[in-house]
Image 1: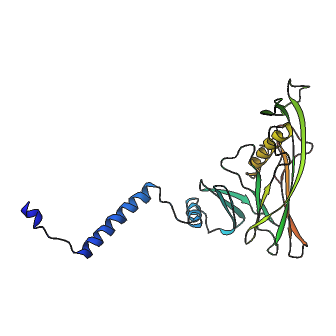
Image 2: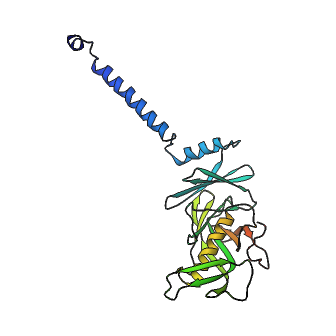
Image 3: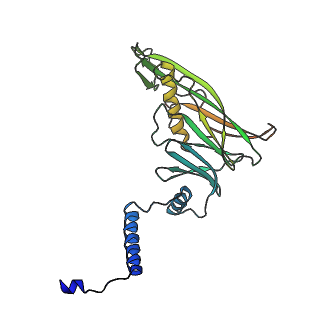
Length: 263
């Protein structure tokens, strides 16, 4: 006990340094335990770029947010890169002359999600943009008498009738002005024409909109039971048309249960 009481004592400065070192070690251990999170969105995006072995940094053009979802979009050579968080995922699209339309797919998407897209890399002089979306599909829908539930079947064949279900053909056009989402980007949120999902029309619209959103997430077609076509028109400060960007998964006449080539 006497030896312990007579041990060398650290000065206040050395005690402060010791505590700082211990705190640093604990913080680093916690940071490592949490998989080395970075403090800013752009830093996390740059790290994901390096993990995906991109040859050069992406020029970030736009950012969009919805609930807890965040997207960054930019150009990298002949590609448009879309980064999604949470998930730290990168999506790659062909860079198109006149502008590229990207699908912002919610990681928690269900049939009732809003259809949301971003247009990037359009004319630099654009100060506003308008999206025109045409959505076409069909299905057998059943809704209860009190409107509390509904079901939807993709139309793979066309039997004469399905007991208790109504065949509906759907063809709607949506127009919405975008919100500026960066230096050269516009964000569009397409609202439902039939907001009550417990009606036959509302439920079919929700299913088709969700299917179109998932189909538009990829560069290839043929995976969707819905036809969709998007066009974004860019305007200057006096309202003159500068150009348009287009993207579609459409075959005419539509083939139930199939898709077409993305153009």
